[in-house]
Image (cartoon, rainbow, N blue to C red; front, side, top):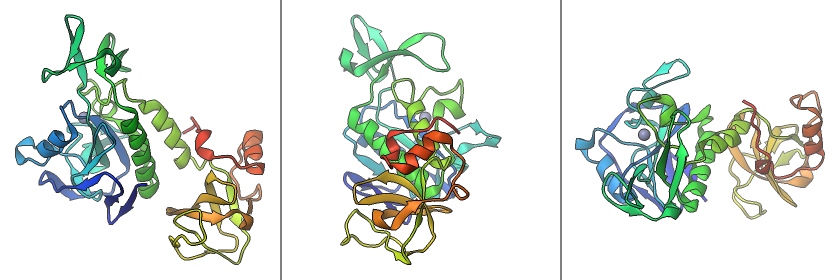
Length: 297
Ligand SMILES: [Zn+2]
């Protein structure tokens, strides 16, 4: 499982590097996804740590799910270039960048597909699709399942930890100039899934114990992640389990952990956002919230 400490990623298959290609302090508001158009995560990480590149990113995500972190998340990296979004210009100053190892657009050579650097790919590593901002079908290098799973995990962690507003593609903020991460990456479903987190579209509960421990795992032996929650504290249910549930403290998105179900009760309607019958049903019988993503924004 991944976590963030002092703006650095902790977890399996995470390697810390330090790129000299960096700017000043960053308070991230967005996450921007990219592909490397390179031949391996390691070679891309090496290049993005080379001053000659004049480019960088916070993370490089490999095809086996391995991650290189090149700079802390509170420092500007150089992944976006000329870019605009939501009235902002120069998205390096507002966003965390993740480069995913992927060869990008492929070209057909005979009956095979080749990358710009001359490697060939079997058909099952190729996605033929029209880019959402494009007019014709092209061949794109597929992402791997472990890589996509890890990208979703990273995005969820970063959105929660930093209260990010949105997950974007480089193709969205540098429209017409960039095509990454492209149609082979399920960006729309990632964005839809994460929109729910910022939309508060999770059932709300209140703490009924005078003090309720909030722990790092679903176990009474797991370490507390914050001081015990007081009676009446409102939490958003992120993941419901049989005895323990993962919650986020409403108004303190940085406090997230596991609490014992017996000391939670559904928030009264006055406190809860008005959500209609569907949400009322969800409150009565908690289900894992992540399986019912919201498309609302
Ligand atoms: Zn890019």
